[in-house]
Amino acid sequence: MRKITILLVLSLSCATNSNFTEEYNSRLSTNFCYALQAVMQCHDLSIRLDTEGVIQNLLGPKFRSDINAPYAEDCMLGFKKAIDEINSGVCQTAWEKFGCYGSEESGLIQQSPLLKNPILCRY
Image 1 (cartoon, rainbow, N blue to C red):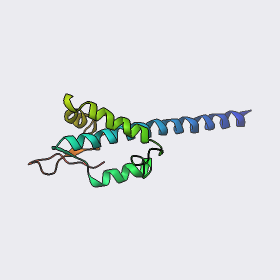
Image 2 (image 1 turned 45 degrees about the horizontal axis):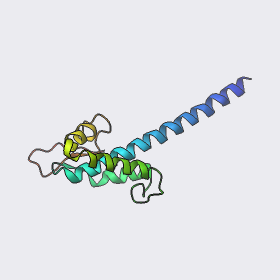
Image 3 (image 1 turned 45 degrees about the vertical axis):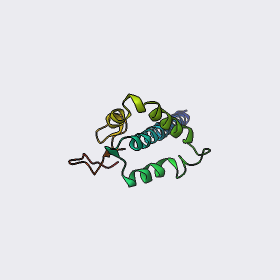
Image 4 (image 1 turned 120 degrees about the vertical axis):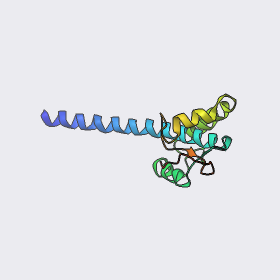
């Protein structure tokens, strides 16, 4: 009986971790694509070249280029959210959520290295 209980607990733990990973990756895809779109609109913000590589290692190499890839829909949602907020402070929102000390996914974006005293960081 004890072995069955332990196996049941372990299998539930694995299922919970899998769900957590899926939720996290979905949110990461949305956040990264939001940040990417924001950077295209905000000349004071940038994304390090190596950041997308880190994200691709987590989500798969085609998560934003192949509509059938896992997390592609989440990425499109991030693009759409940023576009919808272009006239309502997307630059400030992106910095607050995804900047070097962001509240949601810190380090996705940094200030442009072309600024006089930029805040730079690494994801």
